[in-house]
Amino acid sequence: MAPSMDRLGYWGKPTSTLDWCEENYVVSFYIAEFWNTVSNLIMILPPIYGALQTLSNGLELRYICSFLGLAAVGIGSWCFHMTLKYEMQLLDELPMIYSCCVFVYCLYECFKQENTINFIPICLLLVFSISVSLVYLHWKEPIFHQVMYGALVACLVIRSIFIVTWVYPWLRPLCYTSLGIFLLGFVLWNIDNLLCNSLRASRQTLPPVVGAVTQFHAWWHILTGLGSYLHILFSLQIRSTYLKHRPKVKFLCGVWPTLHMESPKTG
Ligand SMILES: [Zn+2]
Image 1 (cartoon, rainbow, N blue to C red):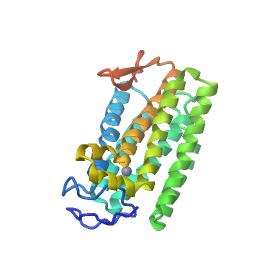
Image 2 (spheres, helix red, strand yellow):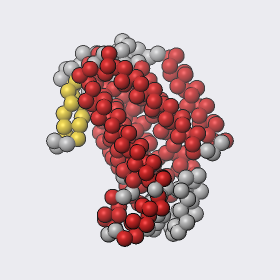
Image 3 (tube, protein in one colour):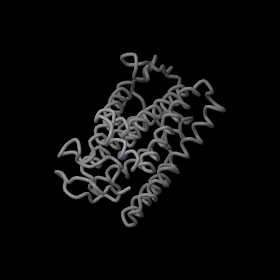
Image 4 (cartoon, rainbow, N blue to C red):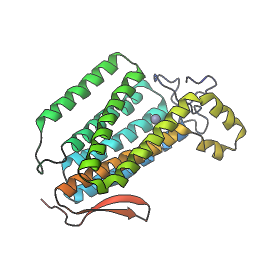
């Protein structure tokens, strides 16, 4: 995976334990991996909007944390791909674990009374987050992080499928759209890692704009950003349906899905 013909730029020699397939400092002197950096905008702006809307709907803090957690991953990922510095890599990877823990809490506690806090899963998830962080700070093995993240995603997939099979079958389209988009992102993430040499060679012959479309790690950001955003909407729709807030998915400008409450909860 380690690039051989990379240029150096503003941030100096990469110190991260991972360096992705996109050639360094090709588009900009100030951004190591340009497309892998700007593609994080989808993981930053929509969740911030989602958090503000959740706040104005008077919904629970855990969903505001979910949206802000996703935005934090996007900001960390932006910093990581822009600099390729080890500290920035942690700013990307550790929030992935923490935000996923918030998603797990939301999805496993969605059929409880409103505004109740269950300390047992919170403690378990905290112990998990702290353990993963401590181990990863000492054992700088990216595969360890990937497996731990994968385990959390698996918990979400199992719980999501359980809910749409046994509780709210009418939420299947949103659930499977979110899962499908995320899975497609994961496929492209693997293609980017496994076929890096061929992708780089093909970019030599393609016009720059067409070449940019073959930056599959950037597509991973776009698709997992969208998939995670839809997952939060899905989780929020389950919760607000259970609490009888009558949620409805609406499309902003006819494209971007957002959730509206027909009977907003105030106070
Ligand atoms: Zn990335």
